[in-house]
Length: 216
Image 1 (cartoon, one colour):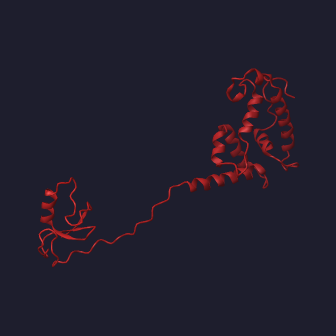
Image 2: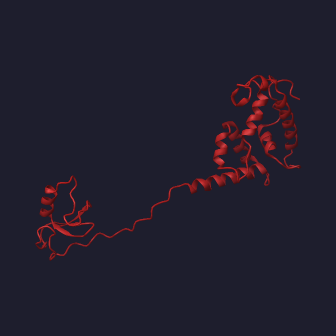
Image 3: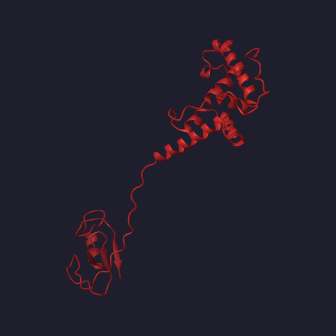
C-alpha cells in the first residue's frame, strides 16, 4: 500500500512497464511484468482517490499536489492515454500534451518492445501514420507546373519596327517583346523607354511591362 502522500513512489517497477500496463487491455499479456505493474497501478489509483493533499490543495497546478509523487505519477500516466483513431486529431498533438519525460518513455518502449502484438506500440504507430497523413493533407496545393516556353525566334530583317515602321535590317541590335513578339530597333526602344511617363517602360503596342529580349 501507499502509506502517505509524502513517501517517495516505490521504484521496484520500471517506468516502461508502468506505461505499458496503463495502456494494456489484455487479460493475459505476454509481457511477464504486465500483471505485476497492473497490480501496482491499482494501488496507485486507490491512493489518488484517498489522497488528503488532493482535497487540501485545490489551487495546485492541474489539481495535482506537487508534494505527492504518487499523484503526479498517476497524472503523468493519464497524459499518455491514447485515444481512438476516430477521435484523435493527430499523433503529434497527443505527444505535445504529454510531458517530455513521458514522451521519451513511450519512444523507448516502442524501440525496445519485442512483442509483435503490443497494443501500445500498435496505437502509437497508427497515430503516427494518421498524423503524417493529416499533415500532408494540409499542405498547400502546388501550382501547376509552367511549360518551359522556347524563346521567340530572332526577328526577320524585313520585319518593320513597331515604333518607326522601318525595316529592322540585318545591322544593329533589335529588341523583341516577350508578350506580343513585336520587334523594335534598339535606338527606338531607348527613346521610347526614356519618354514613357510610367516608372517602368512598357511595350508601345501591348502595353505590357514584360522584359524585352535582345538580338544582335
